[in-house]
Length: 308
Length: 314
Image 1 (spheres, each protein chain N blue to C red):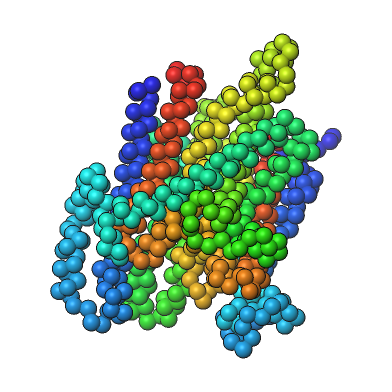
Image 2: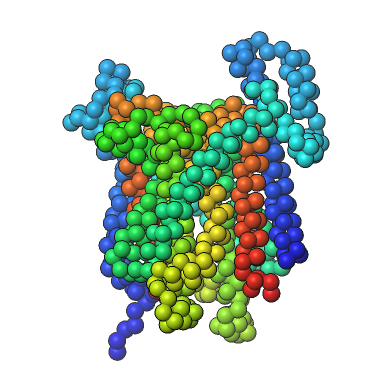
C-alpha cells in the first residue's frame, strides 16, 4: 500500500523546489551561526580601539577596514549580528505570547471583549509604528534605569550595573509592544473560522474537552500561518532594531549595532565609503533573505492559496 | 451612510484619545524630568540647581498637578488651538510644527505623485502580462525593493550617484521644492511606498481583466488601449485608494529617516530632535500629528470607498 504523504513532507518537497527560499534559508542560517559563535571567529575585540590605525580602507589585517576609533569593522559587524539576533528572537517570542494571549481571548469569548480587543489592535496598527517605538523607548528608559539602580543598591550585584542589559530590555519592550497586533489577528481569525467548522462541532458533541480541542484542532491548523508570520516577524524585528539604533534611540554605543554603524557613517561616507557600504549592504541582504524565506514557507504551507 | 461614517468617526476619535492618553502617561511617568533637562542645557551640570527654581518652573508649566488634571487641561488647550510651549525653544509648539510639517508635506506629496506615476502603469503592465517574464521581473524587483529599508536605499543611492556615477553634488538641507537637491530624497521616499501601490494595482487589474463586461467591450470592437483606460483602470483604482493609510504610515517612517540622512529640517527631523531633547509638549504634538494623519487618511478612505462602491450600503 502506498503511504500517503504528511503535510510536513509535502511542504518540505515544495521548499526543495524553491531556490530563492533556499538561498534565503542559507543566508539566515549563516547569520544565526555568526551570531552564535561570533566571539570565536571575530579577529579582534569589537571594543578594542587603536587610534593609530583609524579609518583604514579594507586590507588583509582588517578585512573590512576600521572605523574612526580604529575598531575593526568586521568584528563589529559580527557583534552587530549578535545584537540583531538576540533582539529579534526575544521580541518575536514576547510579541507572539502577547498576540496569542489577546487573539485567543478575543476569539474564544467573542462579543464585547472581542470588539474591544480588536479596536485596541486597530488603534495600535494605525499609529505609525516607528513613532510609537521611539516614544516607548524614550519614556521607559529612566524608570528602568532607576529600577536597575535600585536593584544594584539592594543586592550589590554588579550584574545590574550592566547598561548593555538595560538597553536590550528597553528595545525588547518597545519592539514587542508594537508588533503583537499581527499575531493577535491571525490567532483570532483561526479560532473564529475553526468555531464554525463541522469537525469541531462533531468533536465538541462527542465530548472532547477544551485541552483536546486546542491540541488536536487549533494548534495543527494555526501553526502554518504562525510559522509564516514568525519568519517575517523576525526579519521585521531585526529591521526595527536597526531602525531604532539608526535614529539613536536603540542599542547605545559602544555596543555594536548595524543601525548605529550606518548612522555614524553619515558624516564620513564621502571620504570613507566602506563605512557606509558594509552595514547598508548587510542589512539589505539579511532583509531580502528573510523575505524570500518567509514567502517560500508561505507557499509551501498554503498549497491551496495560489499566488497572483 | 451618515450612520456608517459616524460609527467610524467615533471609533477613530476614541482611538485617538487612547493614543494621546497612553503617550501622555508615558511622558508623565517615564520620560525624564524636562525641567532638569532644561537647566542642564543652560548650566552644563545639575550641581548648581536651585530646588526652589525648579519648583517654580514646574508650577509654571503645571507639572505639579495630578495626572488626570494635566491631561484634561492638555486636551482642552488643544481644542483651543494651544498645543503647549516647547520647553527647549520656549515657543508655541504649533508655530514650530507648521513650517516643519509643510516641508514634509511637500516632500511626501511629490513622492506620492512620483510613485503613482511610476507604480500604477507598472502595476497595469505587470497584470496585463500576467506570469510572462515582464510580470515576473517587475514583481521580483518589487519584492526585493520592498525588503530593503529606507535607511539602506538612501545611503546606497547617495554612494552611487555621488561617488560611482558622479552626476550630483551631495544633497544636503532644504532649498524649497524646486531645487535639484530634493530629487534624491523624493526618489528614496517614493521607492519605499512604490511596492504597496504596485501590488494593489496589479491584483485589482488581474481581477477585473476577466470580468464579463471587459469581454463585451472587446466584442463590440473597442481598441485595447481604450478598454484598459476606460473600463479596466477606473474600477481597478478604487481598491488602490484603500492603501492610502498604509502609504501614509510609510511616508511618515520615510520622513524620519530621509530627513535625517539628507538633513532636511522637516517634521521627521523635528520628531527625533524633540525626543533627544526630552521636550514633552513637542513629542506629544508629533504623536498627535502622526496619528491624526494616519487615522484621518483611513477615515477619508472609508468615505471614498463608501461613495464609490454602493455595495457597502447594505
